Length: 188
Length: 450
Image 1 (cartoon, rainbow over the protein chains, first blue to last red):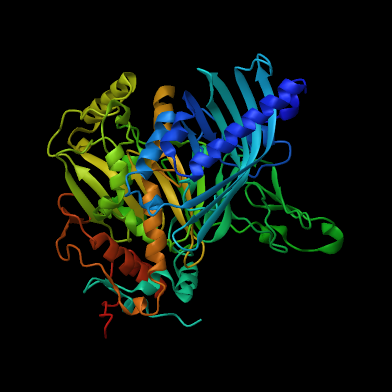
Image 2: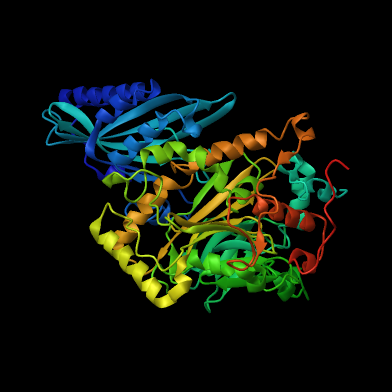
């Protein structure tokens, strides 16, 4: 998952580029829903068995990055390692109107770029599962002057369910060591 | 720098605390010089450095320290700065090494802090005694049930004296769920984040500010506890139903909130989402009663070990450090605890619960961060600072040593905060250890209006 070069790329034919465009459109539409605070519609894009993972990042010696740079899914404490139920709880909490970390609501803008199609199974012509990587810049402004900028990479797995794409896995690599924000109330 | 008269700012007799404490730059500097250089501070957990050569870079006050295990297995806390030009000798968050070598001129230190390598030593430094130029090591260090504590003051009392009767409450966080002593370890992965607030606000909050419950209403409404998937609301399981809550202050400045069951109660069903885990905690609960008898009636909530180390005792279970990072900035570090020998599925469930409860991504604590942020901002105004804050809750309602050791209130109180700030003032006034340990009274506290 951390090494794109190790994954054989799909053949770059017309199907590949059409699918890449479709995946990018999915990611942009998803960002649009989040920025418009349409949380219920956003949750509909998530597969029921979604894994949403954001590790913490350590300063480690050269040569140790693969083994130690990020906290590990399945055993360590991370910023996020959760499922759709927990994300739905987060949305529900924001909508109570008394979640003070998001009341009044933040102004949030997701910039998504560098979309790369890494894998399409069984094929780009008839895809059921795709893996894509992208970059994000999430801007959060709240209350009066409070501003946070989150920048990093995402690796997403999308799955075709009843003719529509659903997000089945999202790994978020935030490029910070000590988190430079008091809270992580935004979705990535 | 002239010392500010902090006794004028902390008027515990009238329950008034000046807002200067949360924004004043001179007070902040005075804290770094008089408080964080003397008090015992939590540095880390031995499970973060299990093997010889392991290290974990931590902080004491605003300074970087290395928690290191030397090749003989001994634990050291060393200031992370070269004795030659002051560059950091360890650039990493954690790892394993034989030496800490300064990148600048390559002075090299063993993992016990001894200076062992000086390039061109014979030619350039004839006669220099390398033994005098080790990394600066803390004056005292204590390993208490795996938690590592340190102080820069050689005259500070031993850690267990400093901890005093707060020990039986901290034990509730550190001991195994089934009542065996110790046995906890830290999950790997240390939360580190920055809150725009003065460090004392969260430290005080964890002294037992139970009054702030309404700010967590959103998370209580939706339910995120270990039984929430089965439909239980609230941010945790209610394991303290019918218990007498106690808020206890200790002479060294610690404040805790625990609860005492009226009798040896049957297990209050918790962790209902997963039957096998529910069964595990039921077993632990009953085993703990069997082991501890009447003592098992005491159950933990939260506490602050003076000045800036706080624990959550049960749901969730963690220790955090509110590191000073400027008058209006706090760098928080938190480790999460679990019984070392807990089954894998128990560890997994707790880990997920901790992540959704605590820290910047924690649905409960997010609301705290907002409060501490804007409470600090609210102390900034020139007019605002003319008006001290109201700390008059439950004045005079406490009693000494009843039903547990310490100054105890059986109703929600700000007495723990009042005493926290009184002790804070004693440090800033440079008083001796007899005063700091409550063996002798310092200066009577004058009214702020005087």
